[in-house]
Length: 438
Image 1 (cartoon, one colour):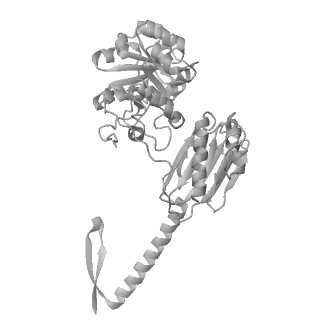
Image 2: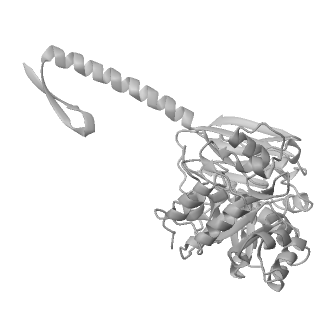
Image 3: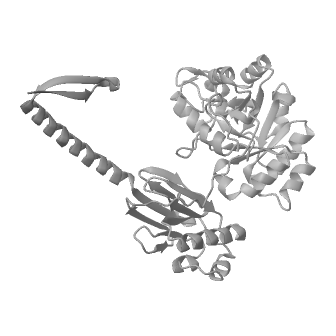
C-alpha cells in the first residue's frame, strides 16, 4: 500500500513523496525521533536563556555593575536598580539614584512594597553608592520587609531576588554576585515601569558625527574620508577631537595612543606635525591638521565643527576660519567665558555643568549658554534635570552612544531624543528610524 507523505522543503515549498507502508513507518519513527531531539535541544536553549546573573559592585570595586538575562547584559547606574520579570524572557527595570535623591529613594521603596504585596518576581542590585546620608533614616521609617537593604551602608554592594519564592539578600563591602534560574511558569502582566517616550521634530542638527563619523565600519578616525562619507549620508554637525603635536600644531586625533595604534607608529609621543601628516590611519584614511580642517569646512559651508578635547578658545579663534561655524565643547567655566567673549559658541561639558554652584539653570540663562554635552549613562538618574534643561531651551547632546550593549543610535533615537536634544552618533541611521509619538 502506498502513502503520500508531505515534506517541507527549501523556502517552505511542499514536496510530496510516494512511500510504501514499511518506509512510511521508518520515516515516521525518524521524524518523531528528530522532533524529540529538536525539542530537547530547544529546551536546553530555553533553559540557558532563563539564567539570571546579578553582579553588584560597590564604589570601592571600581567596576560596572550589571544584570544578565539569558546572556543579554544590562549595565546599570549609581543607586538601586529594580528588575521586574513578566516572564522568563520579558522584564522591565529602572534605576533609582537612592544616593543622590531622597525622592528617588521614596519612589523605589513604594515600588518595592507594591511588588512585595503583589507577590511579583523581581531582583535588586546596587551600583557604586546606593546609600547616601539620608538613606537609612528614610528607609527605616518605612515598612519594607528586606532587612539587609534597610541596613545598607554607603559604598556597599547589594543584591536581592525572590526567584525561589522567598527573598534572598546579600551584602558585601566590595562585590556581590548571584546566578539563578528563572522559573518557566512566570506570567505577570503588571507593568511597574511604563515606557516613557518623547515627541520631537526630526532634524539633522540633532545628530553630531562622532569623530567625523564611521567610515567603512571603522570608528573614531577623525579623517577626511569620514567627513566626506558622513556629509553625503546627512550629517551637518561634525565632532573632531583636537589635540597638539610635539611642535604645538593642532590636529584631529582622539588621543596619541589610539593614533599610534591606528597608524602602527612606534616613535615617541606626541609625534611632530610632519610625522603625523606623513601617516594614514589603517593605511587608508587621511589625517587632518588645521589647514585640512579649514579647507574642508570652507568647501562645505552648511557644516559646523564641534571640537572636543581642546579647551583653549583663544587659540582656536585664531586658527579656525569662521567662529560662526564653530562650537567648542569646553571643560571649565573660565574657558566658557573666554569663548563667549570671542564670539565662539560654547558647549558646556558634563563635569562643569554638574559642578556649578547654585542654580545651574540660572547660570546657563545668564551666560546665554545654549548647548551642553553629557553622557547618556546619566539619563536614568538625571531625568528631571534634563527635562528642566529641555524646557529652558538648552540643546543637550549625549555621548557614550554604542558604549553599552543595545544602546545604539536607533535606541537613543527611539527612547531618549526628545528628553535630550540630540546625540553624538557613529552611524547615520536616521532615514529608517522614525520618532515615536503618542
